[in-house]
Image 1 (spheres, rainbow, N blue to C red):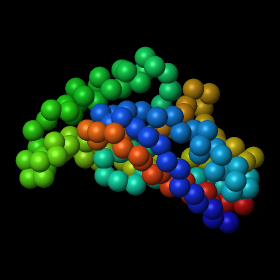
Image 2: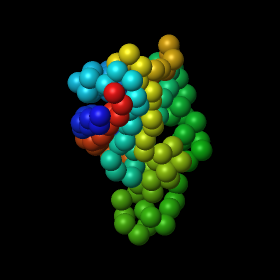
Image 3: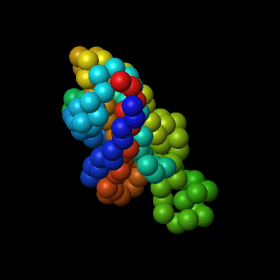
Image 4: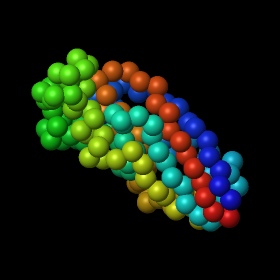
Length: 138
């Protein structure tokens, strides 16, 4: 069986991290799939899906380190071409990737105790992000 549904979240940009674990689990529950996998995919080229221990200090640590690796004021040809100053966000999103796959067992996400599913919005402005959650299994 395959079941899919969009979820949406409002974000603030600049690598804003939003915990979507409960929303993903809700889709898994609706799917009635007991054993299988779920793919979580964010649409758009300036956001990513990942896992993290979602706690305030680590979220801030992540934001600091991603800004050190790919600064938000990085001069890019993309920004010069389009004038939107978000070339850095495309690079960040490409490095992290738009999706992850998580196992489902007994109708529940298989995650570690301190592991949450997050969307990371790298863009340079507020966005309403659409995330497609697709469950496959039996």
